[in-house]
Image 1 (cartoon, rainbow, N blue to C red):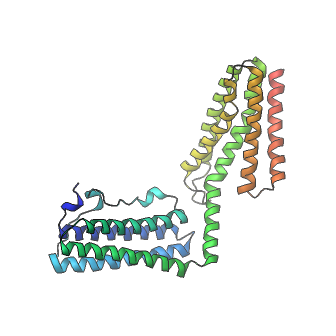
Image 2: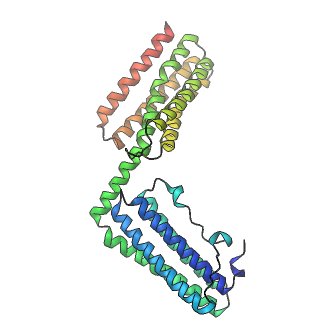
Length: 318
């Protein structure tokens, strides 16, 4: 890699050309990835890609005029300190707010880089070139703002935000809630059964850890293999499986950790308090994201938890 202040004017211009080309392709990828769910925002990024193409054309015309037909391939990753662009495939599934923020950061970072680079050179022609590039990026920021205002009315923005919320619920909240409920409720029976059967907190802790981790692995694979998300829109199966598995394990470990306390009755009291907190969190999530009335959610979760808790005590005491 080379330092930016070591580049010639020809190399700086070639670098700017490759940078504009890369940004244009990123915007085109954004548009393609958002088109099905967020058509208005996709239109914005299609127009921004066209703007980048126009910047690239102007830069190429200037390069040909000053240096000839051959443009050396100099990329951002070849120069120290240059702005790196995160690959679009790493942003999957594309979220409308994430993409909007990424675009804003792209324009601001590039403009700032050009201005800082211009301030570090004493060559008048290079300073003018970098200043023109910085101004072009500032104008592109203004263009992006204008396109947002023209294409995203309040109603359209509200609709796309609601669609983004539904996607978040489908891809993160639902598998996470299923895992948390399974981990918090289903592991109650073996943990408390072991506690009452042996009277030893350590034995209950071992059973709880085994049940929690085992349930997490099982639920994770079950969620990941349930569908590939192509028809349901629920996103990448490995993401859903990971979220579900982790939340299942977390739900079980919560009321397992108190059994590290040597005193049996103290451990039981703390574990019971943790169970109440877990059921309260589940109730809040169901009310917040699943539109379940608070009282109804509390009754459903509480009734299910009480049945499983009673089952564990009865089996452990028999």
